[in-house]
Image (cartoon, rainbow, N blue to C red; front, side, top):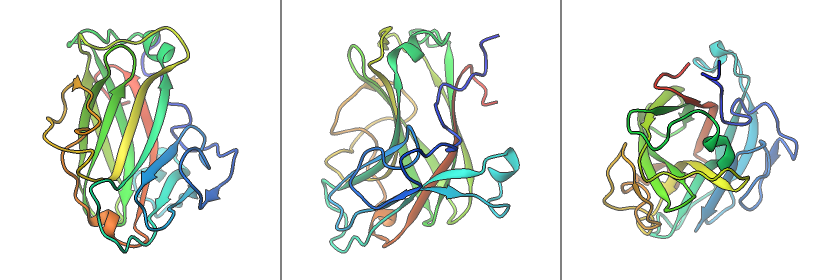
Length: 232
């Protein structure tokens, strides 16, 4: 039975072969298969494999013991149009092509779920982006998060006739959670629906509170992508 297999590698953040903490440039520096991308920051952010405890109500009870933890720097110049910071993970095309999802059918689903916590109370945006063929974009939101409180986010995503996944090791799907994206990357875009990808309208306009709060934190764990319309 191929159902309920997690397509995300290291979604529990258990493996951090490079380091458990890094104050460096972007890319993969700590938790395997998860990275940050950013630009326009006044100070480098810190990324880390963070140890959870029993006080991390929600993911702890589900067996998660680590998170991918992002700490903002001091952003004294405010929120610029070209500023951005995001956490993402990337899946190979063949993993999507062979997973059993009828991805060109609007009645066939894949479900993304994860736990998220922010030190700042606000709504965050994310996106699922296909890379093969004509790139497609599926933006979503976390909903309003309470400060320092773990929230489970679940998004059930239908297939679409414009999706293409080649049976190779190239980039097939990128899942991004935006800590902040300036207006050069955002605009008028509908949530929870597939549309052609545009670099200038990846999500709706972002709230800048997290970005302009010095040393704000954002962390995720329990990232799961599975075929079907239920998060198991």
